[in-house]
Image (tube, rainbow, N blue to C red; front, side, top):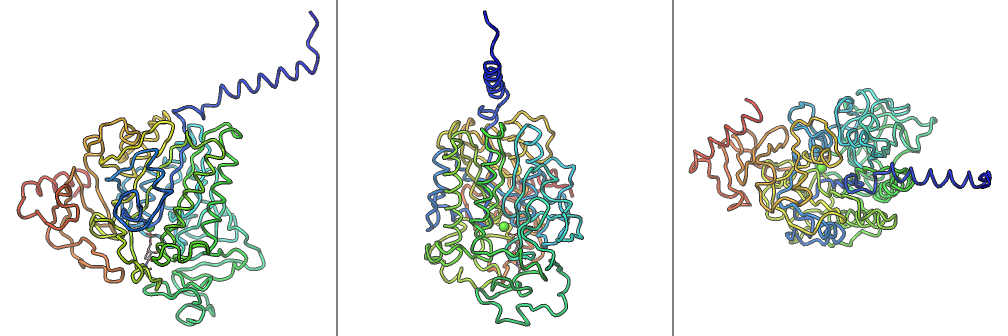
Length: 513
Ligand code: NG6
Ligand code: CA
């Protein structure tokens, strides 16, 4: 028998390499699906048509519920953005960290770089990890020079790739940060950011109201103006890097798709985790041209239709790459809805009969249910059947649950392993979700246990007049039974002291005194 020729050797080696690559590649397995978390900003329970309580149509988000589980008792931990995001990524109650409140655009990174995050744990299990969109968890050490390499970014928390806005659309700096650099910044026009006082000689919405060509402010938002829109905070220079709000949805979507291209299973031989943090429908609501006027509900409704389109485009990309079946997608929102959040954008005037919070009481910033009770869908076509679950689940539980899914043995704090609930194996009743959950709004806490909610007495106004949302604060203790009274209309604290005392005691056991 003759020896193999060099060409035969070469072909043999290629075959061997291809075979061993398949052996090592766990990505297609059911235990290691790709994972995408799509996280909307200020989207209410009733803003998603699958939940059946509003007037808007969100067909692409609804489609996720066709291939998975729609949770009717899904919660963010908090009624504002930063704390909810902290809990989502670290699996820890945000009220344990006194700095976990709405951050300015120049805040230091809130999460310790030694902490376990969703990204770091999945990376450890062999995932390629990326975040695209709204960050709002701080960057650097608090003294960022935006013109240099930024030292502490999502890339220090387990993300291989990041393309983010630092805080919110209404906060400076209005630039994108990719990994450790401001995108498009040129040295001839450096960028400076401050929140305490303006830079000498720089215009603001107060000194130069004529700069507000696209939107005027209603409350707050009267400092630096960019793209005809007044913002929170002061900014100088960096003109080459400033974003265009109308293009933001496409910019983030393109980066999310590019991440899938770069890291998608077949090329990189790894599963991926993408945290796609949409900006919509947070203020300022400036959707792209094709969505303007589409909803009939003004810019807020249009921004939601744009968000729905983004979801559809991302799913289309997964299908095109043959990845849709084995990708687990979680869709949720960081807090409840608000109409007037500081701009004159006709959100109130054009809302019509739409109910952003569905039938729930309150909204963003509120301790009432709509502050934290949000849309929550888990889709995974390869594994899940369409189902509606009323189990009590929280975004904070994704950490322990996904850890269990990918075989990680990390220790988690407040995060509960609800993998069976998220995968629909459990029966459809609350016994399979959490027993209890602490809810937070502006540092004040409420407690849900089973169907019951207890709100301790707090000083403070019952109505946040600026946004016209009930705060949930009262000097009287409040006790509601959500199964009989989802709108929290009947306070049972006086008529059912036994339950009230039990709830109070249970809450203290979790929160401390
Ligand atoms: C508030 C802003 C509001 C919004 C919110 C953060 C004012 C008057 N209001 O302080 O417009 O930016 O912060 O929203 O400035 S969140 O969804 O990121 O938590
Ligand atoms: Ca938010």
